[in-house]
Image 1: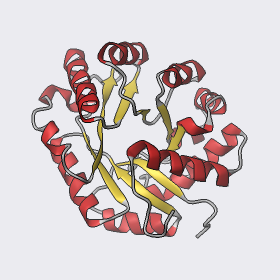
Image 2: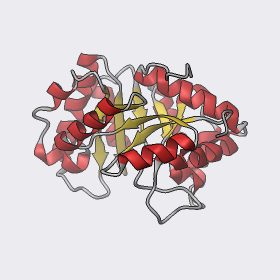
Image 3: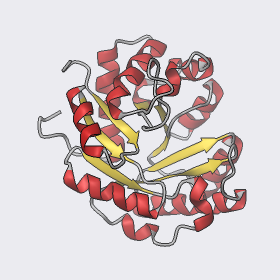
Length: 256
């Protein structure tokens, strides 16, 4: 294990193979994992995994794809000690698996919960930047806000940072077509960035097309460091520190 380059995957979706996936990631230098909920059942499953692993934390939220189901029951999950954020939530105008009004209503409700509970919020936005910013501004941007799997360019990054939000970069930053994402990273302050896999989705190069896993988060981190013109060890330390601060995570048993 390269102790100079240890990462924290701040957004992953652990499945039934979580034990093996976590073991591989730990041996690759991954210090912690935020296991993200996308509906009530999935959020509760994320909590159960977190209860069994001191280096895993959970979020509770309703993905915009599931917004048509409403958010009844979500608030009760936020009191679980393993839950460190509200979400993922937001707007997805690419797939529109839920009606846009249902997405907006659910997103607004998540923002209200994050503000009420003084918790971080994890935002998914796709082909809906203007609507996302407008709704955030209208409802009140939570003090701790992250745009996960950031897919915008420099202008969108600047708008996020103007709202004191964090940018979380995924394997997309390794894709040949992602020049705008890399340009956004190059202009972003180091204190405003985190790394994620969004596994099992969006495997980074050279694993693109296969199932993603948290063990690959270092590939995201190295690509982010290259885009920012920084040493990967510096970015590893900064993004891990940023994630611990953002989610209010306790240090690991090794003191890191």
